Image (cartoon, rainbow, N blue to C red; front, side, top):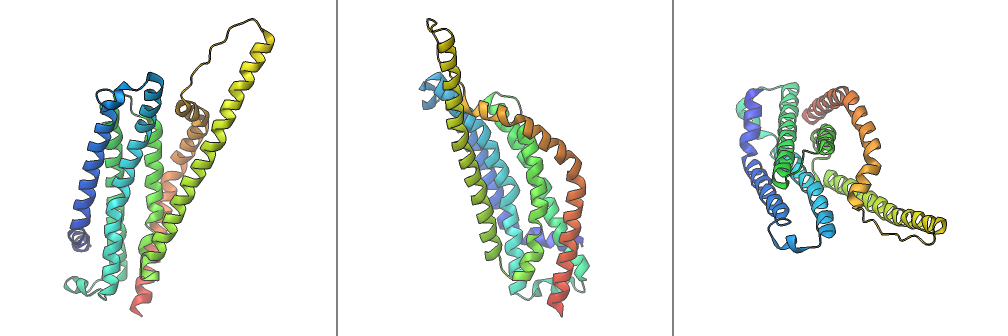
Length: 271
């Protein structure tokens, strides 16, 4: 199996190099973006506006870095699996005889190595962004990385699915649809919460004015991003607690399912 794993990484060399370059570029771009709020043209913005944009950048740059770290290299393995199918698996001739179980095990092992290497790079990306921005490491981001790691175990089902459908087009179409749906949900939630926040603030102000008509009131500017996070924090904490409990058994179950399904598809292919 070691030979098969080594072979997989050698054939994925181009994809791994591209992933590494994208990761480094994402770190550099994030650093320049964050530093521009202190030393660049964005430093001239009004304090409240600048702080709001800074918080938004601080939140999204580690997510972009994590997305690149955890998904870019996986595309290389998917393409390699497709290439093996199209070549009739002839590239395995120098390692034959090899059982379906050994072949499936090597594929899943490579996916796990890529997944946990991506998780480590994602955490390093969060630490890097925190250092550049002069802020603390966000525990919510660490939780998100752990959740993405579990999602990558689900994504490992791509391997047997590629063997079944003999292509990646269907998988990529489904993945794009899921990502688009998540962004749509985020957009809808944001658009729903913002007017509710403004309405509630206006109600509180009106009630205060009715109680004391002669008083002078000042509008308190609240960062909507921080407010949004504070509102969601109790739910994030509960989700994190649940994730701590289910991560290991769910990950092991998904690895087992991916392995058994891959073996089944390889045996079906050999018939």
